[in-house]
Length: 461
Ligand SMILES: Nc1ncnc2c1ncn2[C@@H]1O[C@H](COP(=O)(O)OP(=O)(O)OP(=O)(O)O)[C@@H](O)[C@H]1O
Ligand SMILES: [Mg+2]
Image (tube, rainbow, N blue to C red; front, side, top):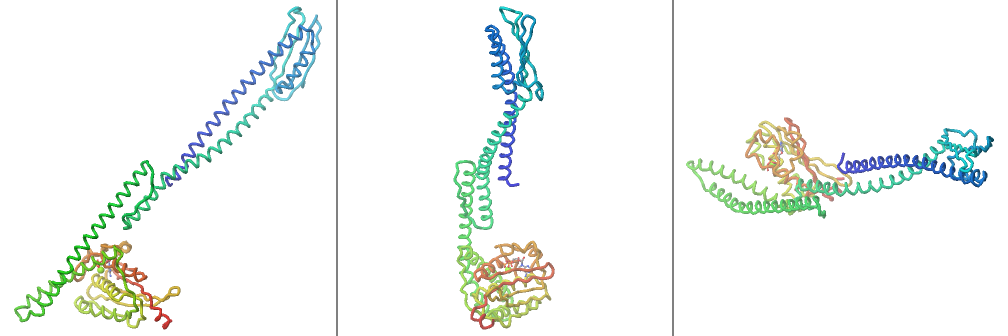
């Protein structure tokens, strides 16, 4: 369960439980108080009847007592009946007020008052107080109180729910946003900030987080600048070394120089490897600064593919691989020929690295239509060792290599894991996509798509 839901549920539940117990407490106390009140009222009635009976006796006005009891009966509904008996000189007479046999439980109170001047004259009064009426009245009051308590309970519950929601939101919203920004930073978008101002612990955490993000961005910028300037510094001397090696090789003749020529070939291969790496680093620097730009023009891919295959001809012979080019008749595509060549070179170089002697590497293409656009899918397939499925998802990240590299590669070097990253950036610039399909032990197929030029699409559609 989310923290927000947990907070809201627990605060609201806590409140509901405490309000319920408070309500029941009030009802319980109120019931006990009402019972006491009733008891007190009965006592007051008893005393007042006693007083009036004495007055009536002194004034010899029996009617006064009767009308007073009648008055009480009207005022106090629990008084269900009253029986008054006058005794004087051995004679008695009585009057009965109210129901003779009332329904429900009745508790009877009896009192007797004697005339102070003539003790033989007395009046006995029995007051029937209905417990049922008292109970009904208490219940009615309890019901009214319960209704009020429920209304207050509902009102405060809504209020508390809103307060709980606000509290939970004020704690979890910045945490959620922090999570999103952290994920962004994890995905390489350094320097992201979270706008959240508060004077509490969360405000402090956000401040520290923003500072960390800024520092990361600064460090990354410093790293990029460093790589960029170092690679620039490498480039010119490497170019000079390469051309001087060429000159020396051209001038070195005679059998005595064979050994030197062999050494020079090794030096040349290593310098080429180094300058490829430097060029890749420069491309990465351009990509990261958002400065890699491809100039798209109608290009006949057949020619580029043939040129690249020629470039790999000697290598395929040396490695014992069959390189076949099935890109023979292609429509014009919108592409930057130099960059597409770079992509093909990296894909074929990868295929060569992971395909053992006797294997095949094949270039092919296929046209397809998506919505109104015609596309050309170009693929490089090999019968090599393939790669593990779990490696596929991170191949397009910079400096990322599969586990198959650890088994050793055929040809020059292991590489640095920049090739596919650069290929993906180039394809992004072309508006196309690149994807890898691979099965361990069975081979790999890397394909990318290019838009067919409108003019060509119109003519071939
Ligand atoms: N045809 C392939 N067969 C098997 N694995 C491949 C193939 N192509 C790419 N890979 C895997 O993908 C990883 C990344 O390839 P990428 O071209 O980006 O880097 P690299 O070839 O290792 O180095 P670089 O291209 O920078 O010299 C490789 O290290 C390898 O593990
Ligand atoms: Mg590569």
